Length: 574
Image (cartoon, rainbow, N blue to C red; front, side, top):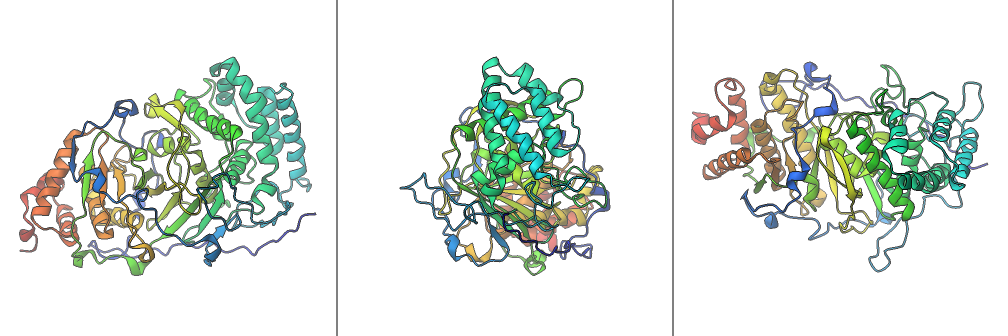
């Protein structure tokens, strides 16, 4: 029997409710009216990717993009894996160093010879291969899963597998009944005969193999990234593929139950059951297209398993690092504003994911806007749903090195998988692609007017600064930040307010800002006009915060940009 280690469960770390005051200083107190978020179906402004497939027409404002620091031009210096002694950084692989002269070298699991070290508790992902995963009658579930997946794999390899076989396998493995109309429609109606045959006889067999060997591939469960944990998990792309194969077969235990008081009430369900269901109509068109993207990923890794490394890092801003906004003399950062580019195409910058506080938003259901689209064209990001507890106001999650596999067209209800994408992003010394994404969740304003309260402006400012701040240890490695209309769709954020908040946060963090307005030329021009005005006035972070504080009582009278243009900095303190 494989050796087993069971760790003592760590109690969940809850954030203390900080005090609130009528100032941008101090900590943020959660707004009780903003907890329930709208459907992720529309979380950002409508934006058609077709219209940005052409080259940018050169109509930008601010500094050229070439003037923005880029980590692909000068890769950050990072310590070798073998020298990392951080107990909050968990590696699922042995120390590994990328050698561009030997690009086929693969990371190895942490434990050798098929050894699986189990950790079945509330501090780690509960993997289906655990001996402690048992059925209601007390028998181990893993042998049941192995038998069922092995049978399906044989059917696949002998060209006999059917949709009904997939359904029966998933339900037998999970011990639950599910609805599969969306998956069934994709395989039996949308796919061509050749596409269906290839998936059923080749790709499906590989998914079975990846799930069957999760114990050998991963060798231990990854830890959960819980509230306040400041943890990082680093794994190979193959390990991520194995975990996603388990999600395909809905193997992760207890994750379906997200009722109040349940173990996973503050987590997403990473299993694919909600992605597979589609009602009597077989699922929305865009849900089918999301499945196409994910299945394209499985097709790609069946052809050739990528051998890179990815990391997921949860970060909580310490109270000691909260800026004294009312005293900050930091100048405005450089800015580049354009309408014809999208965030994922700005390579080498910190790319902002307009996130739901439950990371991934509606990616496993009907959501299909910025965050959900990013997660299906880069399916390794779906691992964050498995790991991450709900994000708190002074927290964010970094997704580092995730590969892109698909291109797309359309947006929201017009979203479509387009074709294969070859991600040629350079790698760092750990073999992670130099793609750094940060999940930055906005408040959902059911009442638009409450976003102008000091409390809510403070919350959004702290959130943005948490995401943009560069740790002191790598202060000389500041790349730019690629962002845009954060929380300005169904979350009802005001574009002008969010632009200024992000300008303040980036300036305080000392990072240039690349602001993508998603075809809003008026915002390009108006934001740059305000920026030029503030620059001429030699405005500082302190001044911008004072503008917001005074505007909190004036928002009904005039737009924020007009208020700034009509109010000299010198008059703010008179």
